[in-house]
Image (cartoon, rainbow, N blue to C red):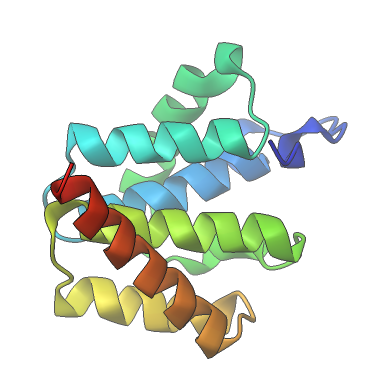
Length: 146
């Protein structure tokens, strides 16, 4: 667990909480192919828990993130919080994004374009993002052969 969310943040509305922004970005990736599945929802929950969100706040955070994501028309708002976090947390988020994208065994042009844009917005090395993509594809392949 990375404990990213354990920082003391006072006087913040729910739309400014980092957990909600991260969840909204993950939800956006899940919905971009117009098929928001239970498998994708589980990846989102696991990611938030791995980043340190407590189980008591998990469902409330996801509910608020779904609301935020449906009322937003751009990803810039979601990425502002994320680009300043530590590299390990960013990698976890990007790996989860790829896991969401490949949860249905394929990546469409919209999903690929989203990841290309996020690479720049989050100040990530293209090689790291490519390595995380390959890791997600390999994980999906291994899951299919179990």
